[in-house]
Image (cartoon, rainbow, N blue to C red; front, side, top):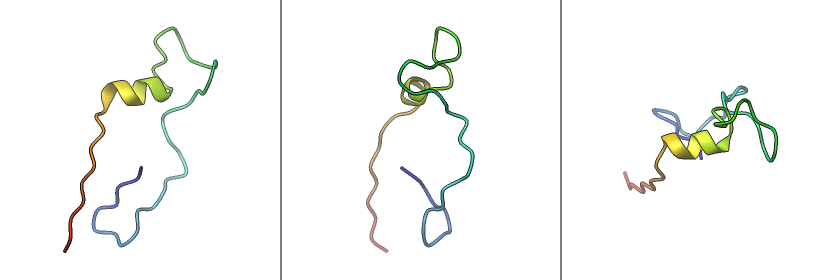
Length: 50
């Protein structure tokens, strides 16, 4: 998902540092793919009324 801070709508960026899907990867550890994203982050849902 996307997070917008002090913005009415979360805005996507044109470049993401994560690449590689399915069988494409850089190295054996998949440091640039979705595996690295899931390894270095934790999922969290925050709902707030203001």
